[in-house]
Length: 141
Image (tube, rainbow, N blue to C red; front, side, top):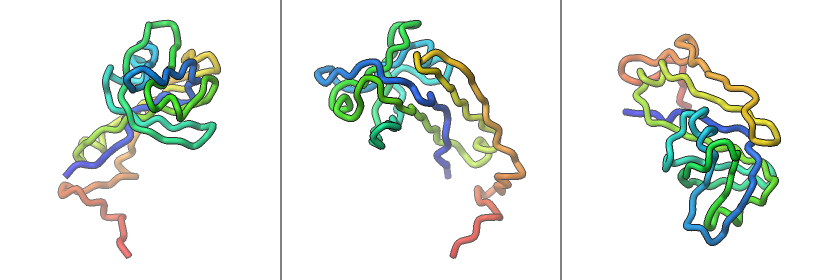
């Protein structure tokens, strides 16, 4: 059994472009991808803070240092330049791997410059998962 865990996110990126006639995806500055631990062509969820839309796509690396965040193809209909988005990646982990997992959060400013990175800790006391993959504290009604 595996569980889907939050892997990393770029929090409140400012959309710089929307290109309806490109073949799809989200272009993100390579430095931002690296800081968040996201790979080129990795599947991500994009959540638009301004209008509530959510979509799944994949990343395309943009020119390092340009701070580009461009929604491409049909996704361009879901965000406009200036909108804030959260780009989230997930990972499939065994329950044991999940206990050792450390999600990364990258906070950016209004120019998409990194202002803070956080590495989250999953405390074994909070996720006391047995060898069989079940949490003793979970009750099913």
